[in-house]
Figure 1 (cartoon, rainbow, N blue to C red):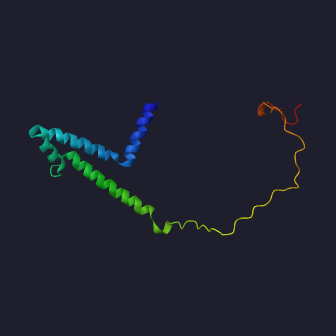
Figure 2: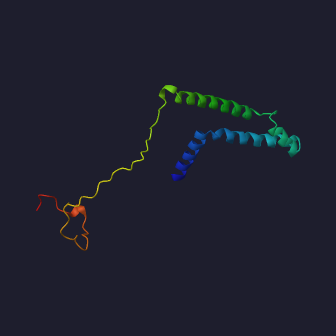
Figure 3: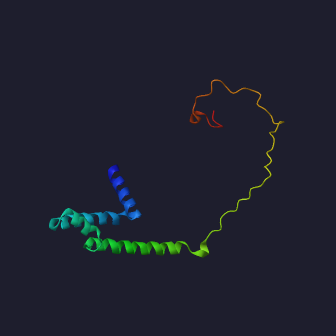
Length: 133
């Protein structure tokens, strides 16, 4: 159960960050390397894969998907940064005069007895309610 939840969380994170396009592009490049290396040397296959002149159908899908996602992200950003909704923020004023702290009340009544020793160990739930008893 936990492994399934972790997998779902990772999948959602990948999708939120847009990493699905990088993963799909990696799959496309791997397929292109395998396909091109059948007909030529590995060096030529690498050059043909990454030169940008021989894109595969998956590369076209990735390119259009990234462009659409970028457009939608820019549209969302434009609506979020509406100048009429900009918040001015808080202005902090630092005074050179330190705050006055009141002295302790020296005439306050003090406790006339020491706390019980050892401390009571009973629960608050075991204390009888007022009026019982």
